[in-house]
Image (tube, rainbow, N blue to C red; front, side, top):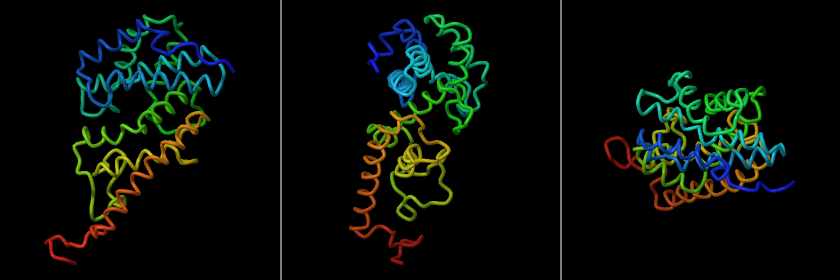
Length: 241
């Protein structure tokens, strides 16, 4: 199979300029900034081409990646949760961006649906563009800088010295600590998990990322055990239990 001849942002430079302008207006300079969109776009482009060998399909997946921050951009205005942003508003934003591409109406609908549904759990009925976008977003969100991002932007305590990763009330959407937030990334690379990556390239990259994050989590846990603070030796009154 031939390699892709250019990066996704080289293929659609006017789209990138339009998307960046709206990111700037929305003050998206944190986790979901324009560089996150470009990273997801490039990975979606590569993943789709590697999995199905179709350049046009890869381009559409890459466009979806560049556009996939639309919900976060609107969330900045609407709140309180990007998952509650109305689909028609996402559609309006993306349609405005897609005039800077050579996409047809049926292709635009595939892109829009992929962006709207990319945070869902996996389904056997997911179209290829959506699968590529989901896998790309999961890969990028598990790359090495996720450690810095979680610590900087989550506004959470770093460690739960009582439960570590076993707090029964912690969830992916409410992780309680930075360390638990990082552990959620591992689900994306666990075979059979309802949110796991499904394409071969994403699995290959995911194996490396999961090993890196697991080693980091294990190192933190072992250091706390070695120093005697895990499990926490104090009760709620700060007496040695």
